[in-house]
Structures are given as structure tokens and as C-alpha cells.
Length: 180
Image (cartoon, rainbow, N blue to C red; front, side, top):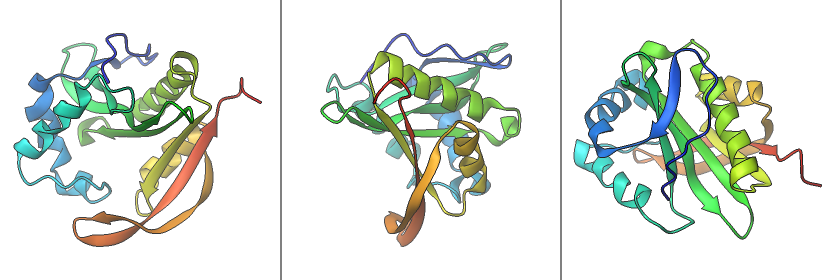
């Protein structure tokens, strides 16, 4: 689902904007780096696999994926993406997902973007629960989620196939503080 007004991101290096097909080469370039790919469930064989993602991103279906570009304020260069790959309007829930280029790891961008996106979903989408699943090996993401107030709820054993192998994922959630 497309939104033209992304959340305000209070980080000095980056801001959010709608993701566009022009971002494909940069997005694909860092997503396919071995040290990035190993902690994700992406299954990318070519840039065409990522191109298909835009069909859903451009959908008007309220349950379709929603994702924004994380770009450098100085140049507009894509260094990440963040959004929700699962949205449920009836249940008022969403599952957050993000990725970052290794060149900006450790700069506080992921926690800032995750917090902004989560608060935006509570305010703008009326979400009561935002959840996240992360490969049990992805310690960087687990730390980001905890910094953003997400609580670990459990281990999902063999939850998703990751490049042909069943893998374990931790599930985290943050509840809307304005809801009972």
C-alpha cells in the first residue's frame, strides 16, 4: 500500500521517503552481500526477484506490503528500507521489517527508523500491536528491537524456510501504549 507521507525520522544522517523502482540497483546491491544476506530470509537470484516486490508495494490493497526508503540526507542515496510486510486491518496488527547497507551499520539508524515507524503505525494506522520476527542468528536486529521497546515473546522453531533450510526465528512485539 502506498503512503506518500512517511514518518518523520529524527536522525541527523538519514530520512525516509517512498521507495521507488529507481532504488532497485542500490537495494539489490547491498541485500545480496553475503554478510547481509546470511541474517535475512531474502531469496534473491536476480534483480528481477526484487523488481516483483514493487507490484505489491504499489498495490492499493490495505493488506499489502508498506515500505519506505531510508536515504542519506546529504545525497538522497538509498541506504536501507523499512516498513511492514504483513498488515492486518481487522486485527490492527503489522509485522515490521527493515534492512540497512553495511556502510551505515552501527550509526543508530536502525533503532531510530524502527522507533519512528512503530510510533507512526500506532498513530497513523491505529495499530494495537507491531511484531517482528528475526532469525535467531541476527543478534544486531534483536538488539535493535529491544532498544525500541519490543519484548521477546518466544522462539518460533522451523518458522520459515531460508534458502531451502527451515530456520528458527525469535518473535518480538510492542503494544500500543494508548490501547487497553
